[in-house]
Length: 188
View 1 (cartoon, rainbow, N blue to C red):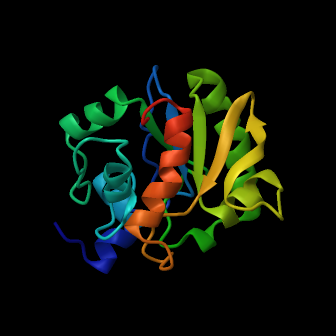
View 2: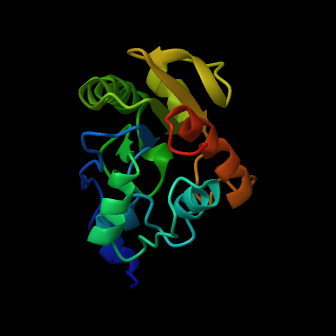
């Protein structure tokens, strides 16, 4: 499946629904949907995005998910059965996260608190330090487990799996993602 630039642009500002359900133990929080994600309706769908390979390598899922053409019902069910949920700080699709305003990210932080209160995961992992800092006003935050919680739910900041974050590998992403997954009881 491929898209022209014009086709992708037609998905600008589209919103895709969260992938979260009762029983969520680990909630991953992206920055916002990219245009490819909006076009396919699947989170972290852009070809080359390392999110699903990192989940597999970390043992969070037991098979490799390819969402680049959209997510199959079986893959969606597998994530939910494993207790994995996915949401975003900002709901609207853009070509790049730097197109978002700080106010959009702050509003996303407030919305995230509501999602966490509703679904009560055991751990939350925000994928992107810069977006986390803006959303929560923590300008000096570092990656890893945060002193802050959302409600009483432990919070991690993990690397963003986008190819634009070139210094992280699938292995380093998997190590970072495994920490909140252990806290959530998904991996030993």
